[in-house]
Image (cartoon, one colour):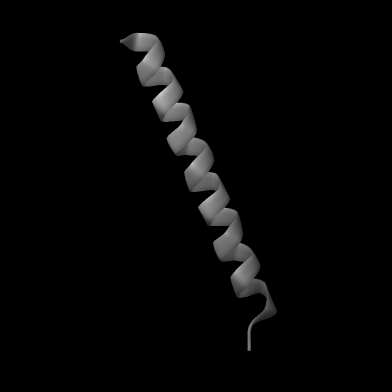
Length: 31
């Protein structure tokens, strides 16, 4: 059992969401 694994996955998902939101925001600015 790895206690760290779920936390790491959660952090990566959070990062992905932030990057996606940022990309959406940037594309909105450029369009």
